[in-house]
Structures are given as C-alpha cells and as structure tokens.
Length: 248
Image (spheres, rainbow, N blue to C red):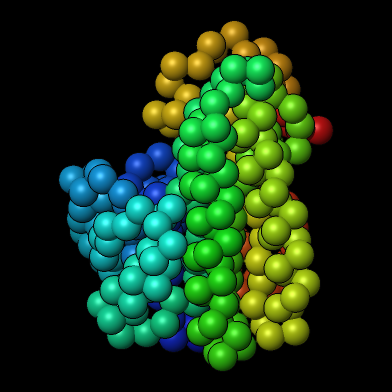
C-alpha cells in the first residue's frame, strides 16, 4: 500500500481517550489523517473537548461512551464507531487503564480484579473484536499501551505490573498469529509520564529516571503514531519503551 493511500479506508479507535495519554494519541492519529473514535467511561465533557479540538484542527472524531470491562463493550463500541464513520476500525489503541496500588500482603481481590479486568482482559476483548475486520481487509494496526512496570518491578504495583506484563506477552503472541494477514500488533511501554495518574506521586522518584524528567503524553503519542503508520508495516510484536532510560 502506497504512502499516498495511507491511512487505509478505515477509522481508528482509542480506548480511554478522554484525557492524558489517550487524548494525546487521539489527537495524533487525527492529525495523521485518521477519523478517530474517542472512547470514554464517564468523563463525557472531557471526551467532547478532545473531539472539539480535533475538529477545530480539521480532523474527524466521535466520542463514544463504554465501560471497557463490560464483555459486551467491544461489539457495541465498534458498531457505533463504524456506523458513525461508515468504515471499519482498522487502527485500535488499547489505552484504557487504571491503577489500584497496594502492597501484595494487603492487596484485595477487588483491587487485583479491577486492574486485571481493565488493563488486560479489556485489551484482549477489544483486540479480538478488531481483528475480524482487519484480517478481512488484510491490513490493520493495533497498539497496546503497556508500562515500564510490565518490564521491571515497582513495589506496590503487583496487580498493575502483572496486567502490563501480561499485555506485553499477549501483544507478542497475537502479533505472530496475524502477521501474514498484514496486521501489526505492538506495545508502547511508557515510564513516568505527566498525567493525572502521576500527579500525586512523589517527585523524588524522578531521580531514578536517567533523563531526570517526566515524559509528556505527546511524546508517547508520537511513538504510537509511528507504529500506526505505513512506515511501521514491518514492525510487529515489538515493545517500544518511552521512559527516559528508566528500563535500560
């Protein structure tokens, strides 16, 4: 497929796209020419603000509410986005995620299950849904937002680390299963990124980051943009760390 014909005749979907990294990714993909479905769970005003910013810049976007942990959410979300844009979802970014930090001896079943369901199981279900159209079209891009915590231990995040490590291995395995169909599946593993989720974290921890600063959502989004691009057509099953050297 030539660069002139990219993006293909399809749209993109970003889960958890109303704020932080997800919002930056939605804006990046829209700037790259994709019509973008912006998924959110409860923050409708924030999602609509992302849509408005994309449209003001000449792009196309659509806000769609769904709890990604609902087993019925993938089918209903894809249907709504595809009906709105009139084309199949050929780029999916599984970004929705939560944290419920606690030391392992005190970690509750609810804290464990909530993180696994949101950060891992939902990504599997949305990927499974996306692959139906992508394999028929013989083209597609899936990017899973993992974490450096899926690659190295961080005390108090055994549930988060397990979910992100599982997401990385799911990415690698699913990637080799569909590679011959022209579909790529990759992961981006951010480190410390300035978002609402890190606002209350002890800033002294930045001393462990070789770059001595936090990253920005836009820096993560730029890497996602590359993996969704035509130039990355031979990159699959990869994990791209965006962490200022933290995991080196």
